[in-house]
Length: 254
Image (tube, rainbow, N blue to C red; front, side, top):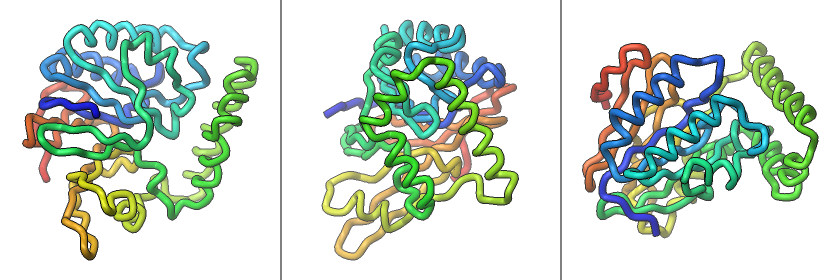
């Protein structure tokens, strides 16, 4: 099992050429925060979209170089999300990062936590769960990766338009995790709790179930005008935020 005493965790950066402010903030974060710890965990939706490891842009190439340099002093772990689920081993190797399955247990300090992107726990969104089961199944994902690049780019653009249309139609942009799904995932385990992103609802929650010890659910926020990260120093943990334009780190309210 992966074990680190000091670590930082992030998710939902949605990096793209359209948000140079987030790209600059991430570079500063690597130098100011990630370089000072043992491990960096990126738990999905690192990029706004991903059509294949063979289709990287100059932005993707630069990010890979930055992470590779950081890996000289900090272990790097990548988990895919619902936006960048096609990211694979080839790009992870360029970053000198370990690609994690979802979910993955890790030991932080003396406690074991379950890490997840979080989208599979949003079981109330039945349409998305049906879509996810199909699009991320190994046969379909393998087929998608073999499609001509132009087709994959068109598919990615179509999916982004469909998401925007859904938001304009008044559907909730993000659906929270289902509490029963969370309790079922933690049931009978010795985990201290669950750490995830995806919902863009940064917060800490207690998870209680009959006959089970109370656990914690730590939710990391997305990166927009404010960016979030979770830090561990032994068993002490802190949810932090900073303004992406000012780059002054501050403790987030709980």
